[in-house]
Amino acid sequence: MKHAFLLSTCLAGIFFCLCGLSACKQPIVYPADFAVADSLASADPDRAVEMLASWKEEMKLKPEHVRNYYQLLCIKANDKAYITHTSDSIIKCLVRYYETDGDKRRLPETYYYAGRVLRDMENAPLAIEYFEKALDVADGEEHLFLKGKIYSQMGRIFYDQQLTEQALVLIRLACQYDIQNNDTEALSHDLSNIADIHWDRFQLDSAEFYYKASIALMETLKDTLDINMMKTQLGHLYIDLHRYNEVEDLIQPYLNHHYEFDKKYIYSIAAKYFLATEQWDSAHFYYEKCFSFDNIFTKRSACWGFSQIAIAHNNPEESQYYLTQYKLCQDSIQKLNQAQEVGLTYFKHNYELREKENKRLKEKNARKQRYFTIILSVFGISLGGIISYMIHYRRKKKIFATTETRNTPDPDTLPPSSQQTEAPIHVASAEKTIVSSVSKYPNPSPEPIDFRPKDDTNIKTVKTIILPQVPDPAIPLTELSSHLTDMANKDKILAENDWMTIEAFIRKNHPDFITKLCEAYSCNILEFRVSMLIKLNIPPATIARFIGRSKESVSSIRRRLYEKAFAEKGTAKKWDAFIHTL
Image 1 (cartoon, rainbow, N blue to C red):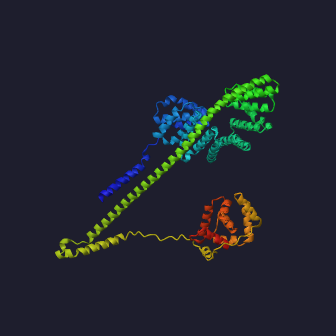
Image 2 (cartoon, rainbow, N blue to C red):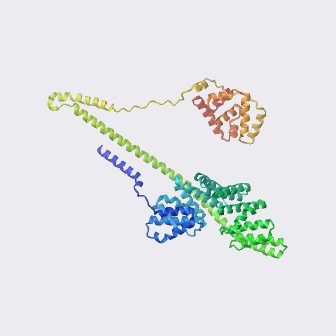
Image 3 (cartoon, one colour):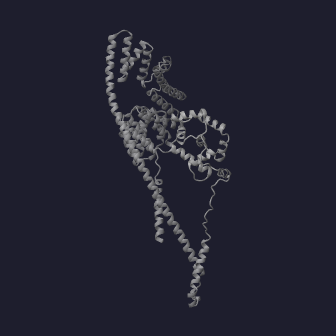
């Protein structure tokens, strides 16, 4: 027993050492200036980029964990400053570092910026993979802001790949996190993304609603650039809606500012507006601006606009020339679209494969977790049993030894014959003492708890009701009957007005039904509606249609109602029979 006790003690020590191993690591400390740079990356990214660049030489002498976090901050600041990522070598090294030896607190953010870098490099499948990894490890409240950004980025990728349905689901999730985090800026951009999706799906009214909601939020932030850009989007939508009188007020403020960000887009919208309103000189001016950009789409738009202006000025030769140029641009775009279709097919295929693999891995991890839990539980129970047994054995042995010492006389004072005759008496006395000592530590079993309700008057009253074997004959439903028949034939769920009509019919023709039903059992709204339909002799299959459930679900509801009302096992038909007695 001594060896068993030592073994159990060793196992317990190993177990607790393994559980507390992570607590033995020293906290990782970063320079205080890093917190300032991290904050500036969101508030003033251009200044953060300059600050981090000034530390470049100094960082070469710092420890590895400081150098790697510095690299992560540089990527973050560049991303916030809209500096396009052109290489993924640094971020991949950071991913490997934080996956193995680095500070695990930085891993979710590292995965996120890996996805951002790969999105800039137009590697959508791998970007989605890193965003999903970020979601898997971002499990704390401190990562709620990051989750909102991840869902937003994933939604934009799916939108770019023309998967608008999946994109809409993801961006709505991002909006939920934005609201939870009180992040007005992120919410305004996500609402504009939803507007873009509705526009692509030709849901123009919804697009207008979300654009206006986005502009209202941006106006609270007083961000002139974002407000003007979003108003430009709304103006472009109004052009498609032929609401030209509302367009110029929206796009003119943006034209007056000297922002270089996405000028080709505002010029394209302005040219389109002036062409639609037959302001030929202004249209020609902005189409020349569009044609100056090295972008095949804006050049195509400009060629089309020039041809329309030439037609308006009765210049067929110039119109023919620009139409030819338009066709050449269209051919080039067609080739690009074919390449994008191949990429889209590849993306969809990879996404489906990744979803299947993720599902398989999740199931595998769940099984491993169950096995580990079972093994750990068995080990804990076994260890507890061994320790309890050893404690009980040692206590019993100590009590027995104490009693034997106290009650056994000195052998030298006894005659030889007495030593043999009195031994059984000593043993019996010792056993009696042990029993007496152990009784000081009782282990009484608790009294059984009565879970039945204190007031069972209603149950007894219900049990005295004699249930009929055959339901009441069919109840005439007059006008209601034809309406319910029509709803059943059309396989429709009953509306709220229908339920009010049925309840009114029941109260008029069976005034005591609802009162008696409530005395028998306090139903919820679904159970109450099922009971009313039973009273009207509606078949279970039709009831299932009316409430939008399966026939088996209706049977389960009826059976449970009987068991709750009468506190005994029963069937669905017994509840029907009871309903018809009311």
